Image (tube, rainbow, N blue to C red; front, side):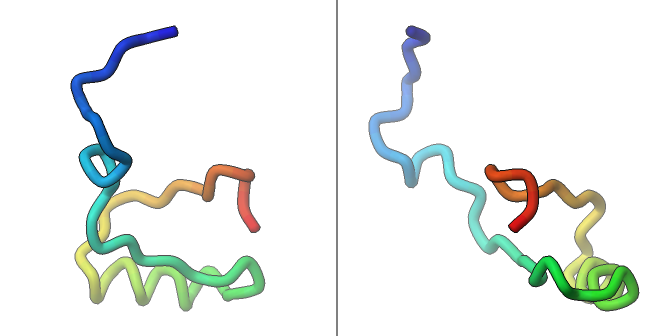
Length: 49
């Protein structure tokens, strides 16, 4: 098991996460990304849902 310097989950969390629902359109996701100045998107830990 790897050792980490962080002691709490909050130490490694990404602040200010933005999300869309799985049934959102690509246009809606793109609009959110543009308004929030987001340059990449990743699925949630379960692969999208």
